[in-house]
Image (cartoon, rainbow, N blue to C red):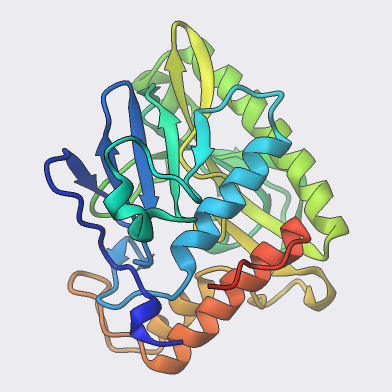
Length: 298
């Protein structure tokens, strides 16, 4: 894959845009246009080079899950494919396959993380306190062990810098307590259903994060859902607790970065060609395994 396949940043003049770590978000009035670029972040730092096809994988997997979980209200209106929103036709090549037209909501300022396995920051915290985000866990668990039950471990949202794990009680103080109880229940329910489905496709969803918004006192599932950026995906046939797992997500990039003498602050280091190509293949394989579809050829 060549750098020509990478869309690192979109440019649509005369539209208000907010650029996140990965997404370019355009304000269309009553709706938003969420464009998943090929930028990749690790340790909350955006790397200087992108991953071919990554943004398209994120958008397409999200749409797959939104349709599968249509019994929960969500913000997706449509995936931009062969037609652009009105007056954006000249920019279709930037948008095709990687852009979602969505309804606006009032965003709940909490990352709703659900963990089914003990990995990442949860494993690090468990080693120190035998708990994760204030939830006491059994003694003797190993790295990447399956948990007795999925746990809800919220985090603060950060556009730049690091998200911070917090307890459920702290999350309730940052927003409405009854709302947080509802989000905990719904997030765990979606995780359970998705994890069971994915296991049947040979993928373990170790953990994931959901984002929610509100609209007229209703709760709406927003942003991306169950993607390689928002989740840890492991191949089920290679799963062995007690060690790091092979993955279909950006853990491959994190593992590479851990080998460098880098302090995890901006600017991020340039990723080598083999890491870029391997990461792209992993994202595409995640899409194909989970959806059962071939990734669209360009």
